[in-house]
Image 1 (spheres, rainbow, N blue to C red):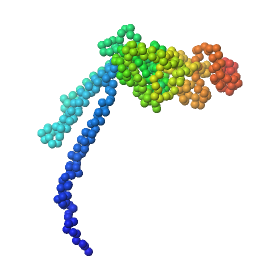
Image 2 (cartoon, one colour):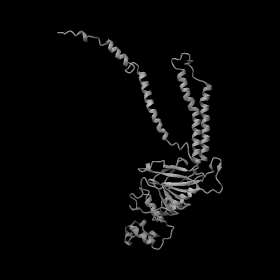
Image 3 (cartoon, rainbow, N blue to C red):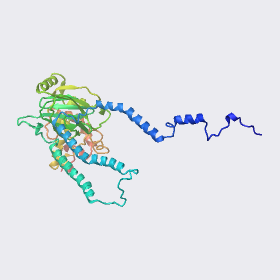
Image 4 (cartoon, rainbow, N blue to C red):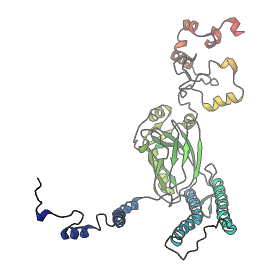
Amino acid sequence: MCIPEPEAYRHDMRQPSHAHQHRAEKWKPVFGRNDATTRTRSKLWRSLLALPLLGLLTGCNAVVLSPSGDIAARQRDLLLYSTALMLVIIIPVMALTILFAWRYRQSNTSARYEPDWDHSTQLELVIWAVPLLIIIVIGAITWTGTHLLDPYRPLEQVAAGKPVAADAQPLEVQVVSLDWKWLFIYPQYGIATVNEMAAPVNRPISFKITSSTVMNSFYIPALAGQIYSMPAMETKLHAVINQPGEYEGISANYSGAGFSGMHFKFHGLDQAGFDQWIQKAKSSGSALDRASYQVLEKPSENEPVRYYNSVDGDLYHAILNLCIEPGKMCLDKMMSVDAKGGLGMESINNVRPLVYDKYARRGSVFGPDPYYVADYCSVPRPGELDTWKQSVPALRSPSSALSRPQALRLPAEQSPARRG
């Protein structure tokens, strides 16, 4: 049995009422009638909302494009010249892309239509010749700049049109990257600092750079380009600061947990201000010798600035050659022995693995104890030989010689056949 539907509710859903049509017309611009327009408006609003974020860029410090040192300024010029030459190709290509897309659009029936076109000698000449010429020019500029701005090359000028004076004495700074701090040694003044350095304006600076642990990167953007520091190796950098001020120095190579705090201040000062800074370092702090350095080189984070009023004259050489510990042969002396052919089997007691080589004593005849290479050229001081013997377990008692392999016994302990 069917019950008739009331007339008030009887209508065809495919034919909406007048009220329904009115509401649909009202919301058509938003709901589906013109999806392309809606998406365009949505993108426009998102773009407008993102505009205030551009204001955050005003806090950026473009020090690379506005340096305060002659070397950094010349590196900046090299960057700008190369970019400008590349834009000679990039800008026309981008402009022609837009022009061709607009000119040869489907709705433009007046544009030339040549579906069988496939070659133009003139166009091929332009396409290949212009980029080739630009590459040649960029290559010439880069090759010249690479040699003129070689960090190992002493400065020829302190500023544009201002050559280095014949009697000018460069400021020598020995740089050591530690975990996670910077050590600066001034051998001409006998001082050292941690996480702070200074230099007179318009005076050439000669950096000698090494590392006590992992590879790092020494970088003062306002002064010159970055250069790596590596253990048991020395890199060099020549630079000059032309404007007084306080500049940021950083590590540009990740080196572990404390990397984010591994930065320092570089002060460009006039001569009077630099002299005062030297006196400040000499009147405060303590001495930096091998013992205090071994404490300093232990890993630490966010180290404050500190000064040392005197420095061991041979400290940087010992850091560079991995012979801070007393009685340990330096790498340069070891390499000198190797360059002369070595000492043969007679030197087996001297050739001890370095503690830096973690694989050297695994299962080797030298045992697990970290022995060092002895400095065979030096004459022991009174009592020094006895102290050394007491520090080596194998030499504390004569009976221990029987337990050592034949090759490791002292000459007096070896059998007559072995000595012969």
